[in-house]
Structures are given as structure tokens and as C-alpha cells.
Image 1 (cartoon, rainbow, N blue to C red):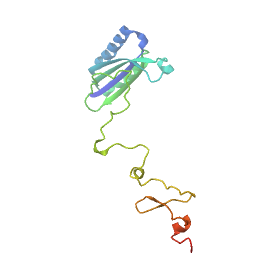
Image 2 (image 1 turned 30 degrees about the vertical axis):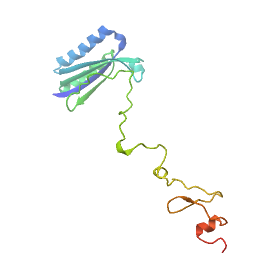
Image 3 (image 1 turned 180 degrees about the vertical axis):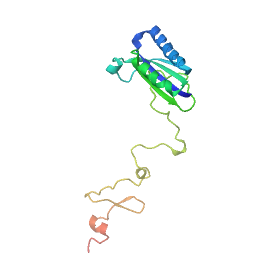
Image 4 (image 1 turned 45 degrees about the vertical axis):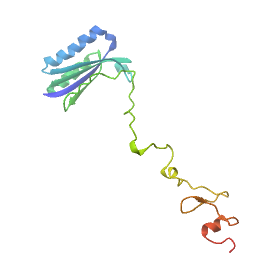
Length: 180
């Protein structure tokens, strides 16, 4: 026997009594066809991500998770039975390779989890957003221009150096004297 999980979304307009009887009906179907129901987890009423005409334009659904062990021959008739039942908006059967996972409690619907919690930066320190390594270390990341639009000169330390007074930038950049 293999392990399976079945998630059903039931029509919320059935009422609480009808939902309970439908959950039991599905469990009985599995037991009558040789499956061993390990767990039935009622997730309750949840907001749907979208609504379509095939789901009768419902905006909410009653979720139920079945964890069971069965032969593979049970799955196809089970899916046909669920597809025919109008009280089942959607269903999904998956094969579980390892042990069943139990979720002690679902996250409340109004709480949204976007990712892992922030972590400590440790010895790395904080990052300055929008600045490259050269700019943080003082080397600058861009070439700056002199007053006349020509690229500025830099000395060996990376500091901006000014051209000597009276010497044109082009001559200084080429290493020639301005008087020659």
C-alpha cells in the first residue's frame, strides 16, 4: 500500500451539518475500498485565491485534508466520485514518498508570511545601499570631469589632482609641456 494525501475544497453554502456528513462520506468511501485513513485534518473555511464558473464563483471554501494508505487502483475511482459530487469545488490527490507531515495549526488567514525573519549581520557590518565598493572606500566609482569638461586627473592615491595653473589639460594628460 502507498501513502496518499487528498485535499478537498467543499462548497461553503452546504452548511455545517452537510459538510460534516460529506467529510464522513469520503472517509467511508476510502475505508470501504480497502484504504486505511490515517488522519483527517479539517482546515476550515479559507479565502480562495480566485473564483471561476466551475467553482460556482465561490470566494471561500471549506478545506479538508485526508492522509491515507491505499492501493493505486483506489485513486482513479475516488477521483471520478469527487468529480461527480457537486459539493466538491476542487480536489487534489498526491502520492507521499516519506512519512506524513502533521501541521499542528495553520497560520491565521489574516497573517501573511513574506519570507524568513531578518538575520544578524555579524562581523560583516551593515551595507550602505546604492554605493559600490569603490565609493565606500573613497576611490570613487565614476570619473569626474574638470571645469572644462575634460576628465579630471588623479594622483597615485586616487585623489583628484589639479592641473598646474596655466597648463592646458590636454598637454598635461599627454605629458608634454604647454610651452613646447
